[in-house]
Each structure stands twice: as C-alpha cells, then as structure tokens.
Amino acid sequence: MNAQALLQPPTGFVRLRDVAPAIAQDVRYAGSDNFTGAPAPGYEAADCWLLAPVALALAGVAQDAAREGLQIIVWDGYRPQRASDYFLLWSQTEDASPSAARLRAAYHPNIDKLDLFARGFLSRRSSHSRGSAVDLGLLDASGALLEFGTGFDFFDDLSGIDCLVVTEAAQANRRLLRRLMEARGFKNYPPEWWHFSFPVADDTQLLDAPIR
Image (cartoon, rainbow, N blue to C red; front, top):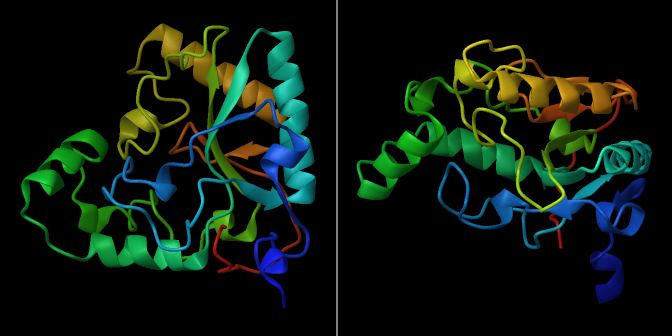
C-alpha cells in the first residue's frame, strides 16, 4: 500500500472539509486544548472524518444555518478507538500536578474524573468511533461562538441540552442547535448540548484507524 492510500479515510468515510468546506473545524483532541491536556492517540492530524451520509447530512445543516446567518464549528467527529481507551486510562490515573487541578476546574469541577464514565460523559464504545457522531456548536456572523452556557466538554449537569439553570440566551441557542440538527436527521445526546449522532446500521463497526 502506498503512502497516499494510507492517508485516506477508511472505506465509507470522507473528510468533512471535502464535503462541506464552509464548516469550521477546531479538532480539540489533536492538540492540548482538551480535558486531558494532551493530544489523544490516533489524532495525528486536526481533521474531521465522518461516514459519508453523516457528512452529507451535516453539510445540509450548515446550509440551513447559513440562511440564519450562522456557521457550524466542529470539535470532534470520527474518534479512533484508541482515543477512547486513552480517556479510560486517563480517568483511572491519579494526577496531583498543578495542570491536573487546572483541567479539573475547567472541565469537571464538580465530578471526579473516576466517575465520568459512570455518569455517561465518556464511553468505552463511542458512536464517534463509528463515524456517526459529531460534537459541534454555532458561530455568529463575526465568527464568535454563540452563548451556550458552558464550553465544549464541560462535564456537568449544566451541559444538559434542557438545563434550565443556564441563561435564557444559552437555552435558546441550545434549542436552535437542536432544531437545526434534528431537521437533518441527527439526534442529541441529552447530557451534552454539543453531541449529536446520526442513525446508522446497528452493525456499523467501531474503528481504530488513525486520523492523518
């Protein structure tokens, strides 16, 4: 197999930028700006891959959002299984460093990381590894993220799509995001306002191909 072939997404997958170049990407797990403070294994490039039907549906969402003066930003799409394995190991590893305290304050101040899997914020077998899930938000015409009440990957009850504790503006923007996504067939994961999945066959495999 030649080097160019190794750079291609798995069969049935596409690069989101090839299908919907207007969608902004900030793939957090390819760098250190995430809850672990380090790049996740398998993210060798800051690129979003998705199953082709999922990417096409998301392109439709982007078109709908554009008609309302908005732009989609994606933080994660396909996730190699080794990244989920790494998240599990991270959750079970004690770390008393100053950076660990900083990350806890930023991402899970009220929940110990040992409990994040049990609480459903992280999963050993994620739909992301099927290429059928996407984490995303909405940008305004100036490129600023709309108010959603919490940041991406803030593991807390405040991140629930129907949480009534956040501001009215945040609640409205969460409803807007869900409306746009559901209109194109996506379904929200209620504990996380940013997480949406697209229906695929039950036997769709979890993959571990690195993103390159």
